[in-house]
Amino acid sequence: MSDLLRTPERRTCERCGRVEQYDDGVWRAEGLGNLYCIHEWDIDGTFVPIKRDRSVAAEEC
Image 1 (cartoon, rainbow, N blue to C red):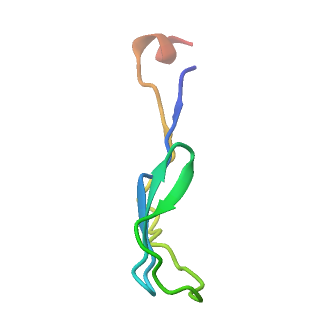
Image 2 (image 1 turned 90 degrees about the vertical axis):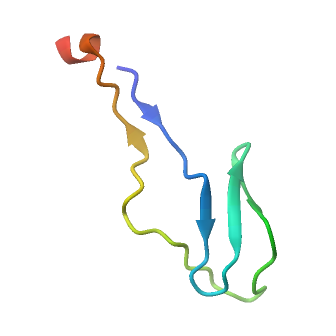
């Protein structure tokens, strides 16, 4: 089995507009946004973290 675990590449706070990029295993902010904001990230359920390998060999097992 060779399923691939994917990570999101970008997220935006719905309250203050802070934008972050996922780079080298950590989130990096493009700007500070609101320092005291309790960030609410734009997570809507469309991101699928596990990408299934659909090769013929995997289906035979």
